[in-house]
Image 1 (cartoon, rainbow, N blue to C red):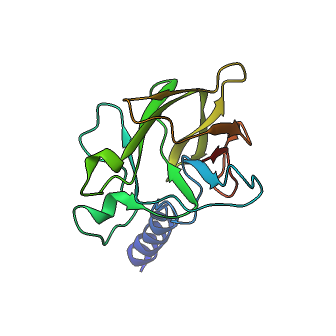
Image 2 (cartoon, rainbow, N blue to C red):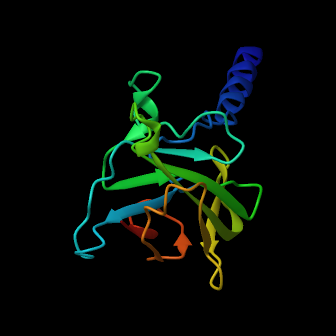
Length: 178
């Protein structure tokens, strides 16, 4: 009887020392993306949809996926008034090409501008299950460098930093007027 009681006691204490599985909740905030909203240059308070925009990171073979269920061409395109793009977590700058009208059959009608975002990074502990996330702060003196990658002219008339602290995805960080 003592052996059974001893076994039951050891078994009970053994189970109580078990930990629950460490699973990162899907609703937990992770490394935020840069939120860019597009505005009408003639009416700066009015958001404007871009036309078949494709965003490609420098030295990346393909663009950022905006439509998971799209075809090989359409999954990289967006025609909305806001986008979310990832910044590099291991460098202090990220360069993107923004290609307006990118899938136009006439390549002369596509227009590419390039922006390099400059920032500082900070790794923040989230939890044991989720690990760390990186938050960013756009450089106060030179937050970005905008260039035209060809002879097609600049389609981004003005770029403004709305919020330099990139900690959440529920606000616009950069406004682009065209």
